[in-house]
Amino acid sequence: MTSDRTVSFTQMKDGTKDDYLLLEELEKPYLGLTADRVLDELRRQGEATLEGYRITRLQHGLQSATRAETDGADIDWIVGALLHDVGDGLAPQNHDRFSAEVIRPFVRWEVAWVVEHHGIFQMLYYGHHYGWDRNARDRFKDHPCFQSCADFCERWDQSSFDPDYPMKPLAHFEPMVRDVFARQAYDPAVIREGEVIGLP
Ligand SMILES: [Fe+2]
Ligand SMILES: [Fe+2]
Image 1 (cartoon, rainbow, N blue to C red):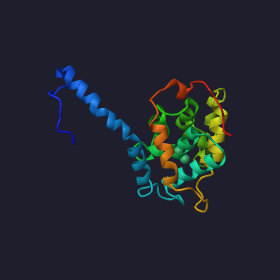
Image 2 (cartoon, protein in one colour):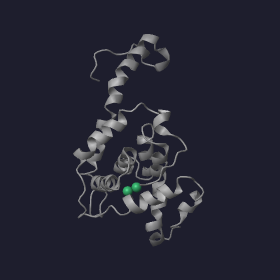
Image 3 (cartoon, rainbow, N blue to C red):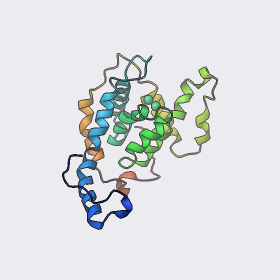
């Protein structure tokens, strides 16, 4: 608690209008720091990470984002690629959906859908080694985002475990993350629900 102003209540149901106006005022700077908290989580993924891979989770995100940018993708795709596994720390069993929720208010609908479903699409590349259905993604074959998700996984996700790939540093992507998280949440002009552009 850094503010010396606090509400009067100990139960939410007892709060007054002034209490809630105070909370609204104090929430604004907090929301403004979302990008910083997300970037902190990415940096943490450069230290505590999944064992066995040849690169850290942070490097995997950087590599995905570098590939997206190199391919000429828009800022939504680049930030989506950077953050597509950001949920691995707190939600390793459903990291795809967790990561999608982090970016959903601020990126195109297509990008959020692809991040949300990339886990099942990625199974194409390894599911058979565990006796799973590697084609589980086919349940989405009629979805308008199917090809975008298939392409995202093929070109930017499954390919991005290479310690020798010249990935850009996090500092390069920080302004893009800040720009995206500075957008008005759920702005229909940003979300563009139903619009599918595909990968460049
Ligand atoms: Fe993932
Ligand atoms: Fe990934």
